[in-house]
Length: 62
Image (cartoon, rainbow, N blue to C red; front, side, top):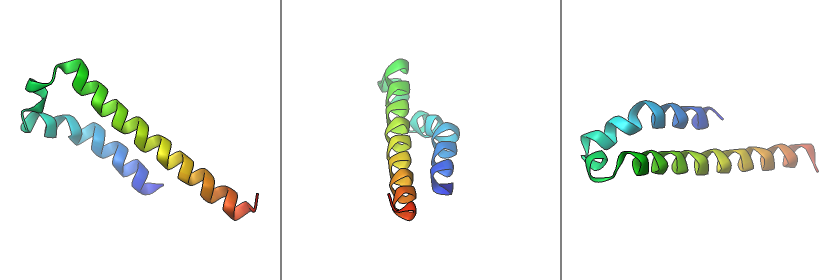
């Protein structure tokens, strides 16, 4: 769960700056770049929630 929070902080604080440094933001329009970041964040959150739920149910035994 801590790794999950670190990823969220990393994506929001450093993701846009890294894209700007690599000149990807100027190549990709602003809206599309935002969509890529949010899609990546959504997939990360979904996979973490599923994994957390699976672990929880395995420990509870149902």
